[in-house]
Image (cartoon, rainbow, N blue to C red; front, side, top):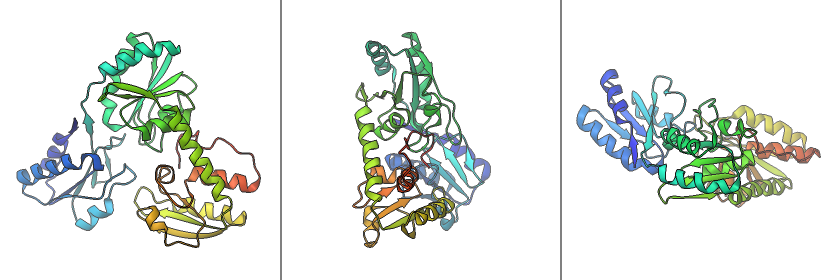
Length: 334
């Protein structure tokens, strides 16, 4: 069950005495965020806003919404990162899942012996970081050497985002396989793509683990196919994300210059939410490149190619006649 660090929220309000606050976080814990807001309202008798637009991570904090509301503090819940706050207004609040991994970790450690793995690396997302030491202990007890990659940027040790993979990438030459703690195909498949190593997802709720290599291969093939489809485009729309952590105008202008040199006609587009429905009115655009979030095009359905920055770089190489390279085996997909 997800547990929000409400103690930190309460102590911060008691110390700073804000006139009003806002809470936001991922869609999956919005009910718990609502319950927390009710507690805060009853205790402090101040306006407490729940921002209904989901927060996808530290790149999408809804700061603009907090500014419009005029709140003194925005508590972003459920995105553990190496920093505790952004500026004076945004405070990051942990939300951990207290499920026990012991049973599935023990089973996995025993059964993976058949694959002759000796060195494994543990990775996970925000909700299960606190479970990593116990799982590490279990695998070491069964004779494995366990490596946990060092964090960098927003990431803490062993943590991965959907677009940022330093702890996994930096250990890929040291280990035989990766174990992702949690139910997220979104994260675990990315680890497999980035490292090209066997990657297993440990699901403590169903007490099962699964190798997600096939999923990762499909994700990578889809990304490559989109690049080749975009190579035939006459007009390319380059989308700049308007969310505070996704604004990359300099990168967009750089790609514009390179694609124009390759003979493409470019239209610059600015959007907050990038969806297939919102792109349909751009009928004269043959393909899109978005510099907001690298997972938008790979994880969602679009009628036309929608490339990420790594895909756009591969596209430019193809247009120049340069050899195709592994474009997703990098630390950060931006």
